[in-house]
Amino acid sequence: MSTAAIPVASVVPETRNQPDVPVVTPIPHPRPVASAFAFIGSVAEWLFGVGSLLVGLAVLAAIPVGQFLALGYLLEASGRVARSGKLLDGFIGVRTAAKFGGIAIACFLLWLPLYFMSIQAEAARIIDPHGRIARQWEIALSVLAVLFTLHASAAVLRGGRFRHFLNPLNLIWLVLRALRGGLYTEARDRLWETVVGLRLPYYFWLGVRGFVGAFLWLAIPLLLLSQAHRVPALGILGGLLLAAVVLYVPFLQVRFARENRFRAFWELYQVRGTYRRAPLAFAIALWVHLLFAIPLYLLKIEVIPRDLVFLEGLVFLLFIFPARLLGGWAVARGARRAVPRFWLLRWMGRFAVVPVVIAYVLVVFVSQHLGWHGIPSLYEQHAFLLPVPFVNWK
Image 1: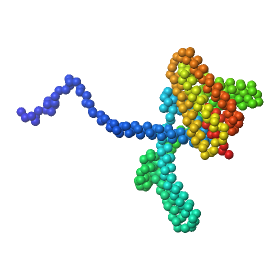
Image 2 (image 1 turned 180 degrees about the vertical axis):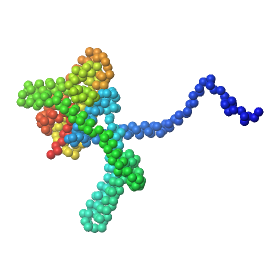
Image 3 (image 1 turned 135 degrees about the vertical axis):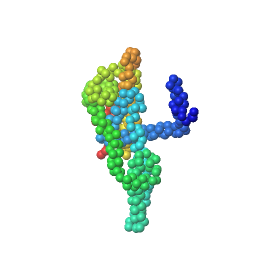
Image 4 (image 1 turned 120 degrees about the vertical axis):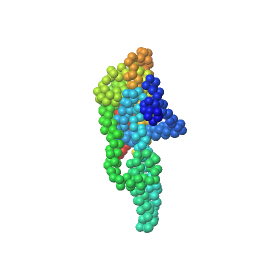
């Protein structure tokens, strides 16, 4: 009998009753050197994004409308930390800030040749206003400005990474992309998605409500404190009320930001209950919040030049941003626990904040006599309200 006549099924070994043998596919191991470089690059980008974020918030803190955006961002940062309990969650939009910071630095580096060329063109125009050399410098400056603008636009359209600005073929890519069609629609959609992703209306509205809620608590104590030079008894009463208010306002703002409810500003009982479950964390957060706000009152003694207003905003953020994050961390610790801490720890937390509260009230009281703006400077509570720039814009 020929083997060609044997059915195929009869020569296949029986495997029905045999156990299934899993097929293991080897997983390629990532190269350790490449992984290390990727990790270092990611960390460097994150750190650069933090610096860019602080600079951007400092710019917003110097603009009247932008102050509400800066306050809204700080409140949202504390609210996210309060929801998750992780301090790193308070650094919102760091990667996006890194991209914007990279674009700003790249554009600045592209602007430097134009700046030095404009100096030479101006010098040639002064020496010989209608001469051939002056016209050549002006033409070269105009051509280079157009080329750099197109180069930067192409780099932004390609992703906005710093490496895109280093690509010498951006102009060729831009021409080919324009010939293919749809460039305007793509640029418009990307711009719209970027603006929407920033959530500017949300931060603005959150900052406005956070400002109003805190101001309602601070208005009466500050009003009474401002009358201390006329009626000392009112000043003492205002100081006592301010000392009581500052114990709650930072954590009321955190609670408001965490739940996004304006009525959270009146939930004193809930804040007290959260404190009972994390007294030492609350004490640390309040210490940092008030202690970091005290040095900022030194900026009120003399008017800061307008050229340094952004530097002042950066100093403000370096002091207040960590305090906001710690406030959210304290609320998160109290929210995770169901049982109040031992009574001795609760009283330790209460007595621990007494010195810093007294120091803060005294500094606020003295600021109306040493500050450049006098009594109105009392209402510039940068620790709780808007990051008011200490500068004279007139």
